[in-house]
Amino acid sequence: MKRSLIRYVLDRGDYGTEVRIAGWVRTRRDSKGGFSFIEVNDGSVFSGIQVIADGELPNYETEIRALSIGSAIAVDGILVESPGAGQKVEVRATAVRVYGYSDPDLYPLQKKRMSFEKLRDVAHLRPRTNTFGAVARVRNALAYATHRFYQERDFLYLNTPMITASDAEGAGEMFQVTTLDVAAPPRRDGAVDYTQDFFGKPTYLTVSGQLEAEAYASALDRVYTFGPTFRAENSNTRRHLAEFWMIEPEMAFADLADNAELAEDYVRYLFRYVLENCPDDLAFFDKWVEEGLLARLESIASSDFRRITYTEAVALLEQADVGFEFPVRWGTDLQSEHERYLTEVAFSQPLIVTDYPAEIKAFYMRRNDDGRTVAAMDVLLPGVGEIIGGSQREERLDVLLDGIRRKGLPEDAYWWYLDLRRFGSVPHAGFGLGLERVVQFTTGMQNIRDVIPFPRTPNSAEF
Ligand code: ATP
Ligand code: MN
Image (tube, rainbow, N blue to C red; front, side, top):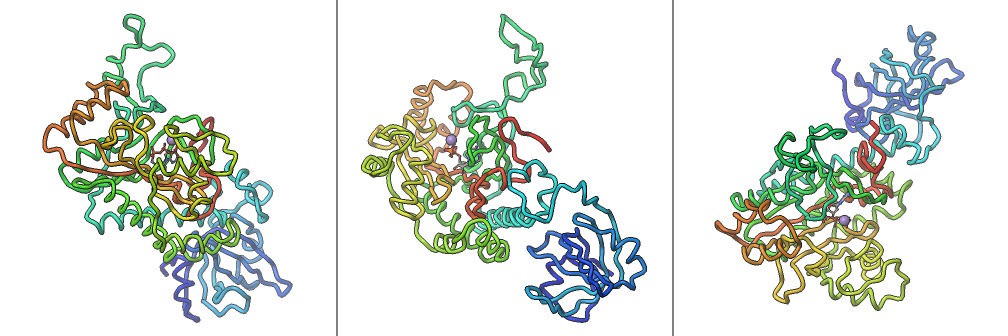
């Protein structure tokens, strides 16, 4: 017999059919009548399935009664109507095969609820819990929806390099990649001699695939990247990881308004997709993790994103009757507390804030006619703050060169990026969305460490 995922067995649910399922035991309860209830889960669906193992089974006393939380089994049986509440079907076992026992005294997961913090110490086992199974399924749905969204709109999926010699943001915060002996690197004139390093110069893990994506958008019109991104920012917040996954679309012949429209369509598409495809998981999060989550997702999936300029935002913040930790005035970057005030208190709807001061933004953003702002945009959502950062890119060679010099960046390193402005330069725009921030928002999970399988944060790279 072919094995079925529990999800299909539950979906079809025709009584009387023979099935084979397999998975990990959640609970075993022995009844006085000489049989046992075993709840089995294979991660394909939120709820597992209940198995009734009769005392007559040949291995009942020897094996089945030794099963405990975490054991792995396969079950052949007949699908029958379940008398219990909350489930339509259960499996009456005709054979139970044990793959692996799990010593209940040593198994780190217990039936009672454990804190998310404790579960981080057993990140290799936490996918077996309800919460982390659900997070993994929602994350998967968001990744799939991302590809669908861009493919439906003729964006080409592009793989940009993870090892880079240029600092895309010009902001530092990069992990160095080297094969030199860090304890005793070769030196020339006192400094480390990088000509002897693997690539003949210093290299880093990428903070963004944008610059390379611009090269492909300048030939193929619409592209998107979806890959791991690394930032050595030593900020122990609940929204920052050292390694995260970013989706970066880039469009030729597009301006900031087109960019904002794409961002809004994309975010709404993501929410609609999970609402349609992960109802059980979302219902769980709504009940146990964040009350009102479903209503909030539904409202955002159908609401317009409001657009305001940075200058308007600062004016609002200055008038706000709130004691912010970081003071605001025109020219300072918006902190998380400001972003959240804007999108939660001032408007209580998603916001797209545009046209930030050039001083606080990257060199590649297109300078506005006012001379002091650039065509940047951030998308802010209630609860998480920023989930998208993007801009129209500077397509004018002289203005771009001026920006590079003003930021004190090495002009030579950007020779190929400047070439894109020398040969057939066009207005173009794009943005970066952090997948984990969206998973946080759609699940209500407070800490970003709990929405990626194996988080990388300062002082933590176990597993
Ligand atoms: P923030 O202000 O939140 O640190 P940023 O301005 O550094 O973000 P961008 O450089 O615009 O972010 O990156 C684009 C998107 O990537 C962000 O909107 C966010 O969703 C995500 N992102 C950025 N840094 C991180 C990080 N350290 N961990 C997880 N996601 C991140
Ligand atoms: Mn940042």
